[in-house]
Amino acid sequence: MIRRLARCVREYTFAAIMAPLTMIGEVAMEVTIPKVMKALYDYGVAMGDMRVVVTRSIELVLCALCSLCFGVASAAFATKAGTGFARNLRHDMYYRVQDFSFSNIDKFSTASIVTRLTSDVANLQMTFQMMIRMAIRAPMTMILAFASALTISVKLSLVYCVAMPILIVALICLVPLVHKIFDRVFKTYDKLNNAVQENVHGIRVVKSFVREDKEIEKFTGISESIYRDFCKAEKILALNNPVMQTCVYGCILAISWMGAKMVVASGNIPENGLTTGDLSAMFTYTTQVLSSLMMLSMVYVMMIMSRAPLRRTYEVLTEEPDLVSPPDAVEEVPDGSIDFEGVSFKYSRNAKNMALRDVDLHIPAGATVGILGGTGSSKSTLVQLIPRLYDVTEGTLKVGGIDVRSYDLEVLRDSVAMVLQKNELFSGTINENLRWGNPEATDEEIRRACRLACADEFIEGFPDKYETHIEQGGTNVSGGQKQRLCIARAILKKPKILILDDSTSAVDTKTDALIRKAMAEEIPGTTKLIIAQRVSSVQDADIIIIMDGGAIAAMGTHEELLKTSTIYQEVFNSQRKGGED
Image 1 (cartoon, rainbow, N blue to C red):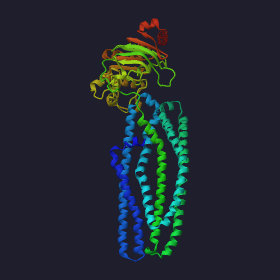
Image 2 (cartoon, rainbow, N blue to C red; image 1 turned 180 degrees about the horizontal axis):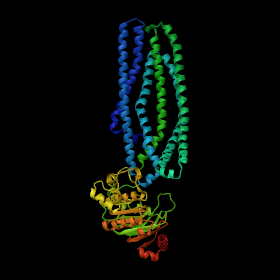
Image 3 (spheres, one colour; image 1 turned 60 degrees about the horizontal axis):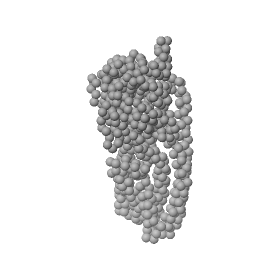
Image 4 (tube, rainbow, N blue to C red; image 1 turned 90 degrees about the vertical axis):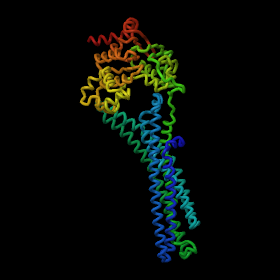
C-alpha cells in the first residue's frame, strides 16, 4: 500500500528529500547549542574570560540562526511535498473513479468516495508531512542527544535507560485501544457525509414534508457519535502526556541529585570531572532525548490513525474497472443496428435471479423502437447494456453487427446518446450544458438541437437566453425544461443510437408529440429507443416492445399488439378511458 501511494509524490520528490535533510541540519544545530553553552559557562563565565564569553556568544547566535534557517527550509519543503502529494493522490483517485463502471461505483457509496477524496486524503497529507519531518527529527535528536550526553557522563546517561522503557510500555498499551476507535470514526464520517448529501440534495422534499427536525436529529446523532469517539480517543492519548512528564521530571531530579554530588566532588573544574556547565547541558539533553521519544509516540499514533485512510484510498486506487476496452478495440461503429442474442443479465454475481432473461431482439439501423412495461420490468436495464454501462451475463449484444465488448469504450459510448430517467444538468450556462453533447458545436447547431427538443421556446424567454446560468442540478428550471435541455444535449451529440429513458414524462402530450415528430423528420438515420409509460409516446414507433418480469412479453406494431397482447390492450384501454374521462 505504502509503495503504491509513494508514487503520488512524483514531481515533489526533491522537496520530499530536502525536508528531512534540512531537518537533520536543524537537529545538529540544536544538539550543538548545549555544548557551546557549556563552554561559555565553564571557560568563559566561571573563569572570568570575556574573550571566551564573546566568542562563544557569537557561536551561540550563529548556531541558533542556522537552526532557524534549517527549520524554516524544512517546513517549507515539507509543506510543498505534503500538499503536492495530496494533490497527486486526489488526482489519481478522481481519475480512477472516472474509469469505474456502474458496478464499481455500486461497490463504493457516493458518500464514501467523497470522504476518501477529502478527509482521508487530508489525514494522509498530515501524516506524510509528519513522516518527512518528525519521523526524521525524533530519532535523530534522540541519537545525537544521547551520544552527546554519553560524552559528558556515562553514569548520568544511564538514567535515560530507565525512563525510555517506561514510555515505550505506555505506548504499547495505549495505541491498540486508540486504533480501534479511529477505525470506527472514519466509517462514521461516511455516514455523516451521506446524511448531509441526502439532505442538501433533497432539501425541497425535506421541506415539503416538514422533516427538518428529523433530519437535524439524524445529523446530530451521527455528529455526536464522532464527538464521543474522538473524546474517548483523546482521553486515552492524554494519558501519554503525564507519563512523559513524570519520566522527564524524574530524570531531571535524578540527574540533579547525582550530578550535584559529582560537581562538588570535582570542585567544578573541567579537568577533574563534571562541571556546572556539564550539568546544565545534561538537563538540556534530558529534555531532548525524552521529548524526541514523545515525538516518536506522536508519529506512531499518527501512523495508527492513518491506517484506515491509507487502506481506504488504496482500495480506490487499486480497484480495477470491470469494463475496459480490449487490446485490439474496434475504433468505429458502422451503424445503429442493435442485436440481442440470447441475452441474460444480473447486477451481481451472487444474485439468484436474472434481471433480464433470454432476450432475442433485432433492431435495424434508423428504426424507432418503443418500450413499455410496468415498474421493475427491466426496461432501463435493457437499454443500459447497449452503451456497455454493464456487461451482459449471458449471450451476445451487438451494435452495428459487432459485439459491444469488441469496441473501444469511448468510441461505443460516443455513438450512443442516453437521456436517463434522472436528468442531470451541471452548474454553468445553458450553452455550456448543451456543449457536453458536442464541445465543438456551432451556435446554429445548438439552436437546431433545441428546436428539435422544443427547448428553444422557453430559452428565448430568458433574459440571457443561451447564456442563462443553470444552478447545480438544474434547480432553477422546471422538470419539463430540464428534460428538454437533456434531449437537446443528446441530439447535439449526433449519435447513431438515441435512447430516451422515460425522458418526456414531465412534458405535456402535445410537446411530447412535437419532439417525436421533429426527431423522426430531422434525424431519420438515428436508431431511436423510447422508453415510456404513455402509449401515445410509442404508438407510432416501427416496433413496440412489451417488457414483463425481465423478459420480452410481446413485440410488434401498435395495430398488431392491440390484437395479440393482453398487456398492451389493458394499458391502451386504461389510458384511453382516462383520457376520455
